[in-house]
View 1 (cartoon, one colour):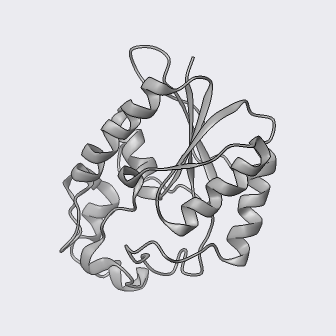
View 2 (cartoon, rainbow, N blue to C red; view 1 turned 90 degrees about the vertical axis):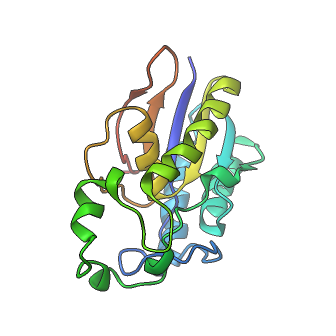
Length: 192
């Protein structure tokens, strides 16, 4: 029965302060490195057979920490890239909360499009084929390291997303791909 562990990357210097830049070049912060090492330890006993990652540096660093414990090589997949936040990229969260679209972003992500950027619907549309591709080739437990938006897109594809979900950095959301319907286990699990 294929199992998918979707992991939000570890913290970056601007986590919780501003929206990240789309270029994906920002690495994990020192806190993010600690978070990811704890996460890798937590997953050391899992029978992980493959790891897929967003091209962003922070997601690749997260994948590599887990891969080392399992002697695997992460596969980078462009479909797992961060959502294009357009004009919101690099903006402070304080600024974003003052924008007229903030409430829609928080409560009805399916109706939201980042000004000058990507809609949540288009993120789901590019993430869906990636999920199918990974699920079709999966044997055992597969890890995906990506971003908050990707985790939310996977939850939407599973039919369980109702508004914005707070998924902590370096956390795991568990999906069971065996069967006609995707089942969601624990959302946003972190090491103790």
